[in-house]
Length: 125
Image (cartoon, rainbow, N blue to C red; front, side, top):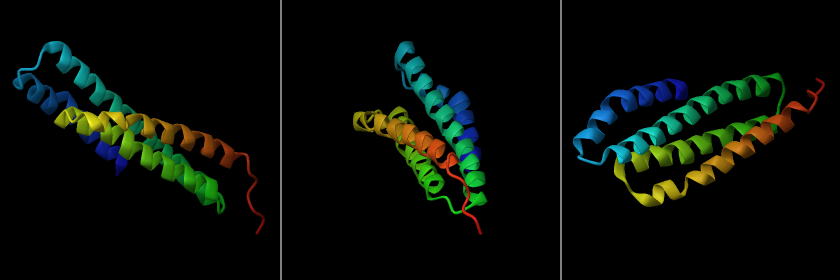
């Protein structure tokens, strides 16, 4: 579902958003910057939607709390990083862009936690 949402938001950014920003009368450089921010949000959204699929495979092999925690960090990163950029581009409300780095830290933490979860051997049953 999260990957489908990324595709949907990417399509909106490529078609509807560009028309909306152009109609707003903003300078071309501002519009280009906002479209780039939207594209970055969609790209990271999709990467981490796919990462959640990897997490589901890692977590399905055995009870792996680290993998579950990594998934939570990826989801938090999507909400804060991508969501912050989506919101900022749509509203121009500056505080949204200020929390984006927190989402980036969640992504990094998720990747590190996922890597640590892969180093653990499955629990014998």
